[in-house]
Image 1 (cartoon, helix red, strand yellow):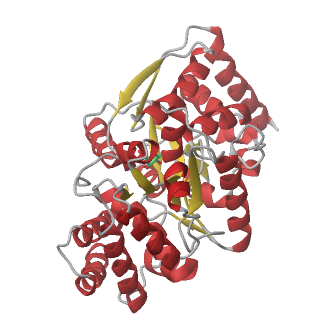
Image 2: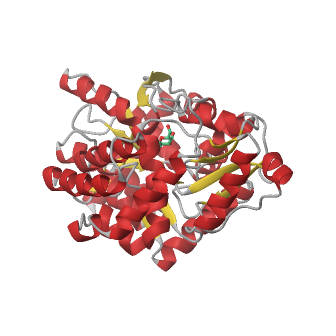
Length: 415
Ligand code: GAL
């Protein structure tokens, strides 16, 4: 009983103090630098400002967050960690293992996070029974974004199967437009590979190769078929794809220069930021062969320990992120869906409503898998080794047989 009252008073003091006295700023390291991402981040900044908490921005450009994690390591090594960091999956576990993250259990207990955050996310939000990060959303990677006018003009319906997809790509190419808008960066190829592997082998195979790192499955004909399909996709991108940022590929579809982009639903944030509407200007559908299945990831904010207790501004930031109203307002703009399971889909557009329904159905039917490309299937060392093989193959350095061999080797070396 005594322990509980101290916890409650501490928690109340934590939150109240944030508003009473002039709070310090929170310095937040993140990689949300595109137009749509910045618009979503403004929702959080304004929410905190309304509580008298200032925002010190620490943006590190580079989709997928690889560059941000490198900058973070340097900051921590120099003894100057930021207050909070946007972080994904196994990276949170790695930092928690190092004892670098603040314990959010008091706040989580007070606000009942255990009851509203799905198990699949808690696996990464908690370490050793402690909440060490606050999940702001659930993104998924197995989406295709299409320009509606281009498809209508060519009489193309959203393809449901691989063969229908190839036929649609061929039709667009024959019309002289770019079939696939793609950005040639390893994390973007890996993001496409998430969907291609799921489509080719199904969720069981996906987990065998990316979670269990099963060598037989990694070296299988199914994996070769997945690489063969990546090569087909490569044949439908434009000549200038190399190095292009993901949001510039979204712009090609927004402008009607290209028909399709395969990308996580952060891409929707770019369409909305350009004033485009689902089903009017653009279409969203699951990568052919993955309808009913979801490759998920969650952006979480990990709070770096600044002392024995979580700071009051840190607690206020975490509480703001986990508030149901905020989770609706933020995700409507960001393109993702709420991490909390008790947030209504009322404010979401057709793609958002589909994302929320798909996530629920996939979780219930065993069709929810962690995105390999965004650190929810295996730790960074394995993920980065897989990136190297996938992008080398996509850029023609390996044929599919060699890519399969290299993938098995890469996992053996980094396991
Ligand atoms: C992901 C992140 C998303 C999105 C994307 C592109 O890793 O989870 O929120 O912003 O990178 O930068």
